[in-house]
Length: 142
Image (cartoon, rainbow, N blue to C red; front, side):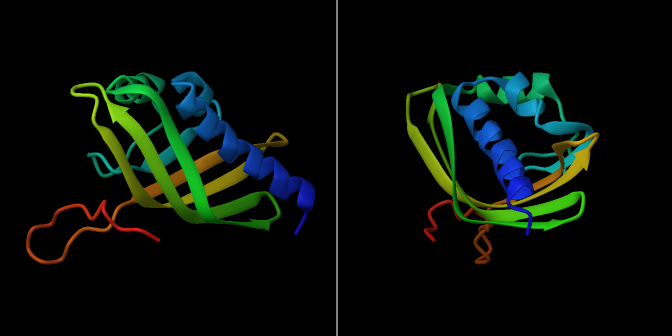
């Protein structure tokens, strides 16, 4: 594995986390290819990359949004990289000031475009209870 490429991919992922922490939607979106497709937690089933939509979501939280990785794995093959692991999201709700945190599964695919690593696909998911309630299992711990 090329250590320089692995470090460059990690820098992109870390820039996303830094952008969320700073509440800077433009900084987050800058890490994505304009044609990226995301499978996020919220409907609809698929999203493009939309700075205005991300900014609107950021505005539902008070203060920084923290995203930290656990067991992050980066696999490289030429101009493609796949990253997967668990992410802890922590934030405070705007209404009521309640603390929210949950673990989610994340897979991110990157491609080197014109010499720069960009996210081309992101998939985040939270398991749900299979007991008929279909509630998100945000209480799980790794």
